Length: 305
Length: 265
Image 1 (cartoon, each protein chain N blue to C red):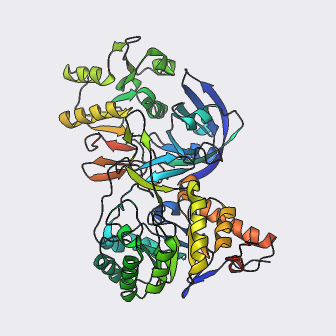
Image 2: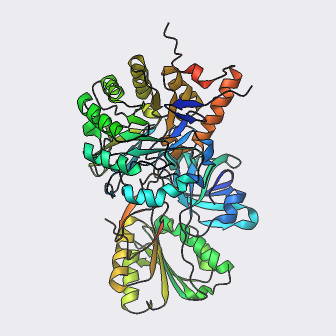
Image 3: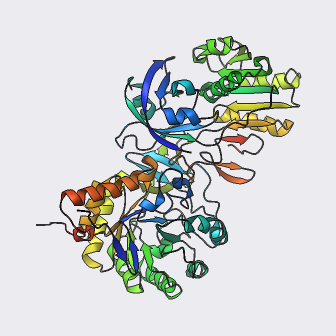
């Protein structure tokens, strides 16, 4: 029996539920020299803003217990160069392409998504309303339900692509934000972005990151992410994409049981560049061994009693 | 071509209190690694430490399908590596990064290796000598804190290159910083700038000084940088260094940069 790993979000059909998370996979090219990218469910690009961004000064990353902090600062080539220099490579792929969009105002988000309109290579947009490192990087919109609603609604009205709202865990109630995104017309929500964290060098008494705080990712945040996915799944009807410290297929299945229909691999790509495609194979094997015909049958099947 | 290969530890040998030499059998990587390239390896299969560690190639033996790394114990990751045993498998991603530009036949070369920064220069020298480069055209400054850190010095002595040793405590060679002696040799014209290719690798304060001298005297100097690199292949933008052309990725645009262009702090 060959289990069906395909998943659908709106009209887009993915061959499997494994995506690679924005910011950990560049624009795809780098990992293309290591494995066949078409084995992925889809690729999510680095966040694109209207203008190019240099990002924060180094040091931008530091390792912590079972995790890492980063404050890249949304460094990216900007929409013009993205279209000219990065889309042609993505066009050579058969896997689904999701472009992550960030902005400092609703107008900026709208301008960027309008520029992407009609680009056939793109399948979906992920709207980053949750970057913890840049004030104008979306967190302004992702931290309360009203502004999240406004931003997602404006984007939805100006694009024909299905959209995913990427949510921040650095809020008092992520469920409220997810509901607002749902109501504003998001076709899916992805969660969680990184948790705000910090590390200090005792010798110099300085923070290890120039931005002082950064975003924590990796296995350290998996339990937090899993709980948030589960909570959101109790209330929100649109598909949920689980993100947070997923390193192997067992982690992925935990997220699926908690209610995610797809998952994203972030920091795992750094630890093992082939982690994502190994997870695809792991899911296939798990379904076969457990006589699960369709991966979708597992979504939200957590037994709480 | 980047290989993700499971290497096998051939030998592990302590060179002083902190530094050890790891020899790894890894056919694909050994065939492709160039001087200046680095290897990104996973310390173990747990999440402690989580991220890979980057080391430059200190020697590559194509005919034996193997390469060597020089590793100094500086934290938990390198401590765990120091306890590996021959025969153990090790998860490798390599060769990564750019490589040193090789000089034309028998141009003068001046190399500066500070501390562990000697590692990629060992490979550069060996690579050139195997290609019948005249050893008398190669001058190496090897600077350390104390003489115990002059690892594998016999190999350098017997290679026939010109060698300047500096130690900060004066326990061997010139007493002082490598960059002080280097600058003195430049000023007194014992090191000629015209048509000479310069190469440097070492701790940041040293490279900052080399970079500043290179700008001042317009040296054709390549420096190899080190940094924490989460991905190692240019995707995460976590390891950037500031340059006159903006932020550059140490792992992908480097680790070898023109010393005149890098802005270190």
